[in-house]
Length: 349
Image (spheres, rainbow, N blue to C red):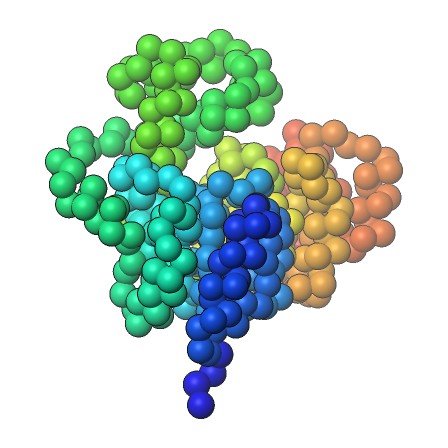
C-alpha cells in the first residue's frame, strides 16, 4: 500500500481552498493536511506538517513569491510546488519557474486537470496548463532583462509597496537625494520615465526581483555548515541591512555560513534547519516582534546565542529581550566591524 501524499493548500480565498481540497480528496493516496491563507501561516504549516506537495496562490498577504519560493525550496528541497493562479502572463510564469516552482496551473481550468497536474509533478515532471504552453511556445524570445544591483532591486520592491521617496530613504537609511539619484539611474536602466512606469515594468517582468543566485530552475543545494561549524543567522526585515551584516560577518569569519531571514517564520525555519551558533535579531520586524523571535529561535535551537539589535535602544526592549533569552542588546549604530568581531569571537568559544 502506498504512503499517502500530504498536500498543503495555500490560498487567501476560503472558497477556492475548499474547492481544491475537495478535488484532491477524491484522489487515492492524497491527503490535504492543512489549508492556509497567508504567507505567515504558510511557513508555520510547512514546519508543522512537512507536506510532500504545496499548492500555492502567490497573491497572498505577507508573501513575496520571488523572495519566499527560493527560501522554501532551500529549506524543503524535496517539496513539490504547484502554483494555482489566475495570472496567465507568460513573463510572470517564466519568472516563477525560474524561482523554483514545479508547475503552474490556471484557476479557470477544470479541477479534474488539477489532479493530473499533481500526478505529473509527483513523477518528477513539470506541469503547465495547456493555454500557457501555447503562449510560451508561440511567444517570440523575450528581450534580455536588464541586470540590476541589489540596491536597485530593493528600490523596486519599495516602489511596488507604494512608498514615496522620503519613506524609501528612511527604509534604506540614506538621504532623499540619494534615493532620487538611484531612481534616475534605475529609470534609465529600465527605459522608463516615471515610478508608475517602473512599477508597471516590474509587474510585467517579475524575474527582475529574483536574486541572481536563485534564478536557476533546479533546486539550489542545501548549504552545509563549514568546517569551523560557525553558522550565523541574521534576522532583519531590511534587505540592505541584512546584506551589510552578512558582508561584515564574512570578512571577520570567511568560513562561516550566514543565513538570512526577514520574518519570524523564516527565522524559526533557519534556526531549526541549521542550528546557528549566533543569531542577530532586529527588535522590530515589520509588524512582528524580534523579542518573540528570540523565543522561537531558542525553541528551535536551544544552544544559539541570540543578540538583539535595534536602531531604537529602549530600556523595556532590553529587559524583555534578556528575559526572553537574548544574551545581549546592541544599538545598531554601535554595531560596526569591531563590535561584531567581539560578538562572533564570544559565540565561537
